[in-house]
Length: 479
Image 1: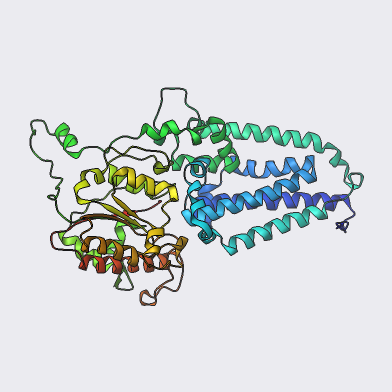
Image 2: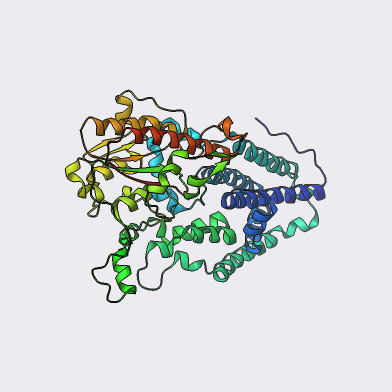
């Protein structure tokens, strides 16, 4: 199929349309970077994200390619659209900045989700990117007049392109030095922990100044994203008794006031996806979001803790079940084969079992839980085999009510006295809004609906526990 000739014959107009295409490409890059970092497009988020160096990079890159070769520029536009789609889909679902560390250490697990990975695809993102790509290509087509028809200044395009590339290089190095970003990807001193070298905020700062491509280039050249030796740089969580004795001389033998309940059976541990501490006391239109969990507060030991993770909430249960500090960029279950501090080992006589509504091969969860000391593991495969249905919610998992029912049956049938449950129904993008809260739509409305559903499931599960059971519950989130 032959592409029709451009109706534009005047070189001045052709150059204008080419520069206009470059302008659209630069604006697209800025909007993608702002939205993927701030997750909202407004003047405030734009001011926080956009820097002089980022603007220079976003516009100098397409301009230099457009001046050198229209074909090279067309390839760039196609690549930009594909990369923007990946960044926006990841950011809209996981609310994190996409880096090579994330891709290398966690995204490989998504291959086990089968057709449910389609939950990541959003039609509005694809439509807007297709619209932008169409506009850029259309303007490029309008500029496709012969070189001899272009204005005299066009003969200087080679010098202009080289000047743009030189300015681009200076901008990148200037941005590195000015923001101190270079220290994220290089290490001249002794071995440091992964948290020091690869932080989520550090990645965002790099994207703010250099854009995604320069950030990924820094990761690639340094090799930090695939440096598996950093995985074992984690440390044990600090002992509160030791910390108390260091600050209270002569207090040896005195407990620091961090109360621990006596050993009890059965022992129940539940990680609730996306549970924020504020949700326990949250009311929406004078209705409590989580009335059951709120009712437990007066007689519960409540501990506020924060463990930042950007690659997956399984690092949350790694910390809670093993008492170890996890690096936020590494999916530990994909690498570690030894869990000497696991609580499951301490509960071996209780025949602990774990229940999870997703596939067991996701992030090597099945193997990790077995190595941790859990005697039985019940994932989506086993639960479906037992007759539980698969929900149409996020990632097509077995819904929380059924996962908790399976755990309750395990205890009731005397197969064991300890269970660990991971809920998934409150995972992004959450459930449809509930009418009783008076919220028509939006992310918050879906979040409230999901938490309310999980709360009801937990209430039913709690009613089935025997007297004297110990319930340890915490929130697991990627944020």
